[in-house]
Image 1: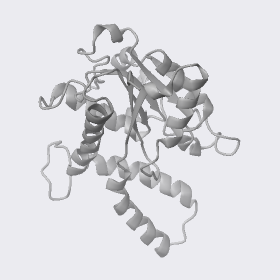
Image 2: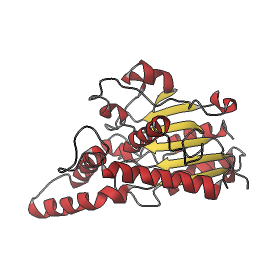
Image 3: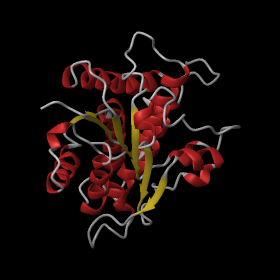
Length: 274
């Protein structure tokens, strides 16, 4: 079937596998079908990057747990993943130059995004641009924001307009912690959204939807960052995700993916673009 919408999915912290997006894709597709819309219209593309930083984190965890009797191991693993991903993504190596240059890890993670966009555009869409929606969880929202910022301010002219994120019509961030990375910035500026080169017929339907569970200590509203974010973010939506055990704890940070309340809202948004 001809694809009329593209959906990129990028994960955040937490131990992830290459099939991390299968659950959310299945759930959203089921909601679309229930509303009478053929889910085959959507071209899905996951962005997996956990294997870039996980080996070093796992090596330390194994050594630490062997050396010391540590409690709350699941929570410790989550915290290490959160802090380790953030530090590893932007920190310069000890022998690296100073001055704010991006690290090799930054480029490796962004290369995964670029490869995913290439595959989405050239294989699934056969080189035909369609509106793009990105689902970004947790730290993945920060990565996605940086990637779009770079595409808007340092565009690679070798890439197609679609691959340069000019067809970005929707952002769905969930458990997002972008605010935590703004405090050291003198002037905090969001990406330009909708992108200036998004075809006019899609701009009125473009939305940035941000979902956060009140018990998710790593998920935050985005509009309070400043007036600029208040303008580009369409909605900060409080939502309860997870079951009776995880729903009221910090573990809710990992519960969005297959929660029916969340996936239904994603499907409802996609329906406005189909």
